[in-house]
Image 1 (cartoon, rainbow, N blue to C red):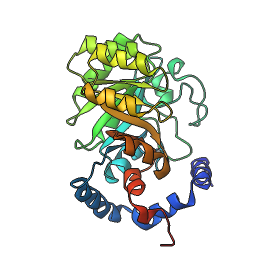
Image 2: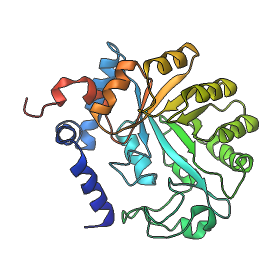
Image 3: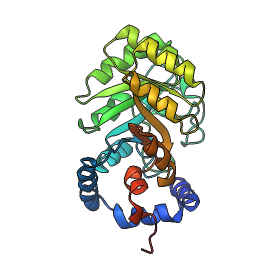
Image 4: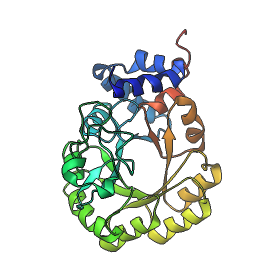
Amino acid sequence: MSQYSKRVVNRMSRRNVLRTTGLTLGISSVSGIGSAHKEQNDTKKAQHYPHIAAHRGFRDVFPQNTIAAVKGASRFKADRIEIDVVATSDGELVVFHDARLDDLTDKEGLIAETPSEIVLQAEILDSGETIPTLAETLAATRPSVMMNLEFKASDPLSWKAFTERALPIASRYPGEYYVSSFDPDALRAVKDVDPSVDVAPIFGSDKEENLEIARELDAKAVNPSTGVLDRDLVATAHEEGREVNVWTIDSWREAQEPLELGVDGLIADYPHMATFATDNSHRNPLN
């Protein structure tokens, strides 16, 4: 069994059996996705459904942050796809999450200290998929999908230089996109380079500080973690005209509270979390 397969099996063994069965019954193949998505769209007319953003391209389904992930997430009818953007030692912008190559690839070393020639050959978890450039990733994504470009780390570039390279690439994507980041300076750089680009602060603490950052930057959204999400945060953001996109949703149980609070988006590792969280028939596979 490959390293990637072992990782997937380990994740699956930790998941609730109801969740696994729900996938098997409802969306186990691409052929069944369209009808499930249509049912969800029909239900939206009667009740609020948030958009679903595929976290790293649904990382519990596909090798994360890869071409296969964005293509697969598109087939699973994700409304949005979240990807992480970092720079190599020679300034190439690539899609990868970790600071180091070691845990997720067959290469070693810091991304920021490794040239693109090596980084782009790094294989993700024995999956056959390699680290893609930002340009390659956007070119492989369906234009109907909004892209959430998380500016993860700028090193070895400044945020300004990073942004000046990233935005021209993003502007060639025929669909919509916005930039999110844990680092307010990354979002400030985006607004300095192109004030028309939407931004969203990501945070897991300091709600008031991050709401102030959102106000400063006239942010499109705030992207809080489930741990910091509460009714007051949602109400305040909505009063100020901002979306609330919560991360990271990994089961229908984790989706329930955000749905009850009226969030606008679920950033999820797995597809159709809103559907399972609001449909009791999927909670008990014996019914």
